[in-house]
Image (tube, rainbow, N blue to C red; front, side):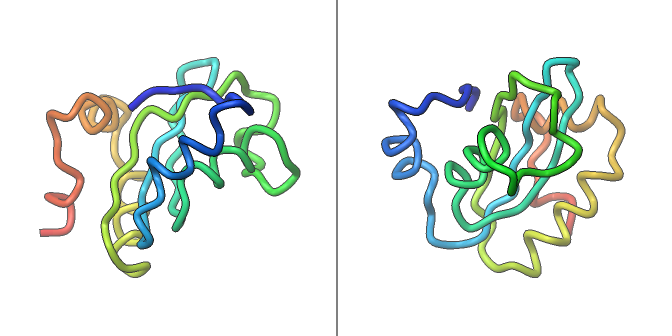
Length: 109
């Protein structure tokens, strides 16, 4: 799931990514770093990172940004546990999450 921020498609992306529960996501910066976060609305949060002051400090000035992966995981506690574990993984493993060869829920088993 890779896409860049586009104002014209923001509403359709919002509908596509809103699962009504907590999600974990990865954003790739222009210098190929991966940022992990959690939210209840991936599209809204991605727009905040790209075009508002509510985005993460880590991502400021590192655009263009690409949302490369997200997964709806259910409750907030699980989402935050996964974020914590993903942030501590080596980049190689994060890339495996992005390409689908590592399932993120296996990190909490």
